[in-house]
Length: 149
Image 1 (cartoon, rainbow, N blue to C red):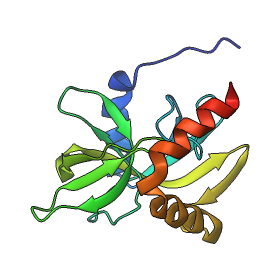
Image 2 (cartoon, rainbow, N blue to C red):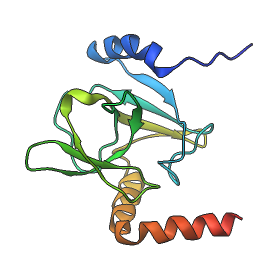
Image 3 (cartoon, helix red, strand yellow):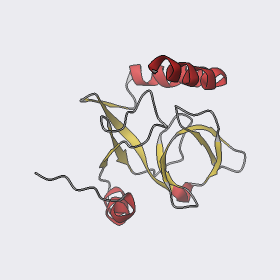
Image 4 (cartoon, helix red, strand yellow):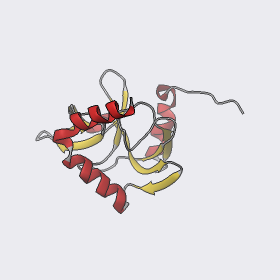
């Protein structure tokens, strides 16, 4: 069977309708911003509707003002109620993400063929540990890159 790639932009209306009706959407991972947890070509996420305010460590799919789709972790909530997000493989925070930019929020992760909810204890432990390492993340990412070479 031939695989066909479809741009997320083309799927957006169907995704929004599915999520609005209470359904879920499974998406493959692309890019490297969520390493080491999520690997492109290997992992997928299951999105649910983001019908409540997000909390720190939630993992929303949102659309930037420039049209780019991004799956990054909420690392804080600003006083004006907007979200501050950052990829697990990044150290520059992205402030100003508004609720209306959200498409969905990750409910389950399929990693290395095993699926688990974001409420799983091991996942929550990983998230908290990775958040604690934020001040030195830049150096950890650089070290991991050097070790791979």
